[in-house]
Length: 235
Image 1: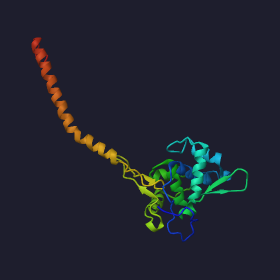
Image 2: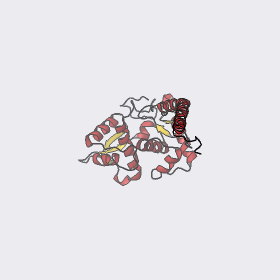
Image 3: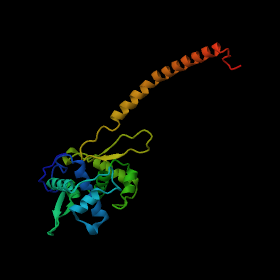
């Protein structure tokens, strides 16, 4: 995903994506601005302290973070350099607003889904629709899926995929989606699958060992019963 940080997302821009993967802190800051723009428009754009408070919320956040003011300010400055955030207003206290839709050239619905994924981690289409009620009302789950698939199918000349559909977890009814603004996700299930496979392969040997232990104990019990003059069947 490449874009010159100084590019201002002209309609003909070639690769509208961040020049580098975002850090978790930058993603949290950006997601917070995207959320507040839709849920508390009267308080938007946000001051530094308002951004910090939003980042450190205990609800609607996965994972929960406790960012210091300096960390939030550093992230805002980095996002400004990536043309994803702009400082606005001439007041003594700076205010910040995001430019995600313009920078990435995506519609409102797609921006909503990206913001939700940045704030709450991987989610199914159904979870995204439910969690985004205050952001945008999707008609149904298939509508959410359609926008996610569009984000995943973005061609390289437009910056490549912005989300990825994760392998469905064992027992889960739906697969979850994850954003790619922080880079490609770790191979979810890779290490876990290997561990499960190793455990499964070890089961026959463990069963055989348990059976041998049972036979050994049974022989000891029978020997003790004979020494005590008792019948093995308890008669």
